[in-house]
Amino acid sequence: MGIVQKTIGQAISDIARKFPNNHALIHPEVGVRSNYSLLLWEIERIAKGLIRMGIEKGDKVALWAPNIPEWIVAQLALTKAGAIFVPVDPSAAPSDLRFILEQSESKAIIMAGGAETEEHIDMVQDARDRAPLLEHVFLIGWQSFPEIILWTELAAMGEDVDAQRLEEREKEINPGDPVAIMYTSGTTGMPKGVVLDHTGLINKSLASAKRQGLGPSDKLCLFFPLFHMFGNTCISLTGLLVGATIVMPCLAFDPSKVLKAVYKEKCTALYGSPSMVIALLDHPEFKKKHFASLTKGTLGGAPCPMELMKRLVQDVGVSDITVAYGITEASSWITMTRPDDPLDLRVSTIGTPLECNELKIVSPASGEILPAGTQGELCIKGLLMKGYYRMPAATASAIDKEGWFHSGDLGEKDEKGYVKITGRLKDVIVRNGVEIHPSEVEEVLYGLPEVSEVQVFGVPDPDKGQEVVAWIKVKKGAKLTLSDASRYARRKLEKEKVPAHFKFVTQFPMTRSGKVQKFKLTEMAGKDYS
Image (cartoon, rainbow, N blue to C red; front, top):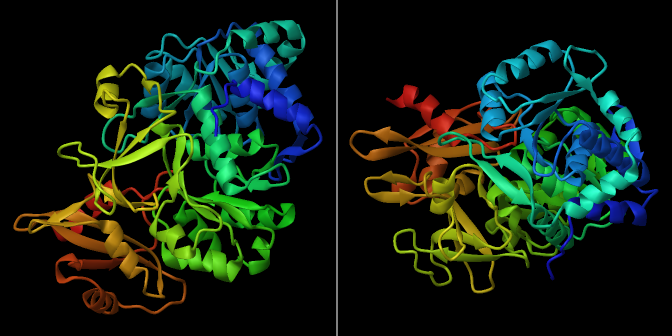
C-alpha cells in the first residue's frame, strides 16, 4: 500500500464528511452517543478554544483522564491545533506525573474531574514546581477551582473563534510533524518519551484496519486504557479512520460492564491482551450469547495461548480474531496474522509484517541477518518514532545507522514470512548454561485443562545462575495440585526446562495496559526461594 500523506486532523475531517450520520462514539456509562458530524463539531470547538488560550503549533499538552469520550475529543482537537498530545496514566503517582510534565515540557494539561478531583489538582499544582512551562490546567468536570479552566469554558471559547483561524493553523501542520509523545512503561528504568508523527500513526492504523477487514459497519469495543497506544491508536484512531463506531463500556476495565456493552451494542470487534480476554471468558456473568455479534478483533501485548484461541474461535465463535505484535517506537503494530489464517498460525506466530514496514531477524552478537528458522533479535524499519524526547543517547542506541530499530525481542521467521516471538532478551532464563525461553514452558503448561493463566520466569540461584519458576492461576472450580503440575511438566518438557518451583496464585501483577510484570514476579518470588 502507498503511504498516505495526511495529518490526523485532515483524515478525521474527511471521514466525518463521508460518514456524517454513522455513530462515532458510544459510552453507555456516561450516556454519550455521538455521530461523526457531532464529533467533528466538538473536536473543532475544542481546537479553536485551545488556539484562543495560546496553544501554539508544537506545544505539548498532557492528557490525564480515564476512558471518557472527552479523552478522544481532546486528542483529536490537539492534532488539529498542531499541538503534541502527551498521554498520562490515570493512576499515575505524584512522582510519575511530575516526571512526565517536566520531561515533556508540557505547556498545559487536560484532566478529568471525579471523586478525587481536589487531590489530583493538588498533584498538578505541586508538579508545577518541577514543570515551570506548565501554564494552563483544563478540567473536564463541573466544579470550579481557582486558576482552572473548565472543559465547558474551553469549548465556549472555541465558539467565539472564527473557523478561518483553525483552517490557517491546520495548513501549517505537515504529516511529518510530531503529534504525540507516549511514555514507555519504565519497567527497566525511567520512562522514555517516544515522539511520534501523523504519518506513522495514520498509516499503521490504516494498514492494520485493512489486515483485520475493518470498515464503517464495524463496532469496536474499547476497554483498553486510552493512555496506552493500544487504546488510543490501535483501537480508537484505527476505528475512526475507517468510519467505524467506538464503543467504550467503562471508565476502567470492568468485565461485567464490557460483557453488557458488547451484547447490548452488538459490537463486532474485540481488543485486548490475553489476560483481559481470559478475565471476560472466565467471568461468572459470561454467556456465549454475549459474544454473538463478535467476529473479529485483535489480541496483543503478550503471547496468545492455543487454548484461549481455540476457545474464542471454535467455542465462542469469534472466527476472524487476529494476533498482532507492536511497540510504541514503531508507531503501533508491526506484524499481524490474517483473519483466515489457520488456528495454529494465529497462535504459534504473530503473523507477517504489515505492508508499511520491514522486519528482519539478526544475531544479537554480530548484527548479521539470520536465515529462516533461526532465532535472533527482531529489528524493524519504516514509520518509526522520531526519537526519544530529549534523550539522544537512548535514541542512538535503539536505532542503528541504517535506520533499523532494535526491539530487544527474540524470534524467528519462517520461509513464508510468518514471525514467531520466542521471548525477550532480558527474560531469557539461563540455568546451568542452558537458555530457557519462558514462552516455550508456558505453552506446554497451558495444555493442562485446569490452567487459566501461567507465568514462567527466572529467579537468581547461587549455584545454577538462575532457577525456573512457574506460577499458575487455576480455572474456577478446577482441581489441580502442585504435584499434578510438576508431573505434567516432567512428562512434556525436556529435563533441563522443567520448572523447579510451582505455585498457585489468584492474580498476577499487571500494568494498566494488561501486561504481566515479570520483573515484579521475580522480586516477589525472590523472597520465597532465596
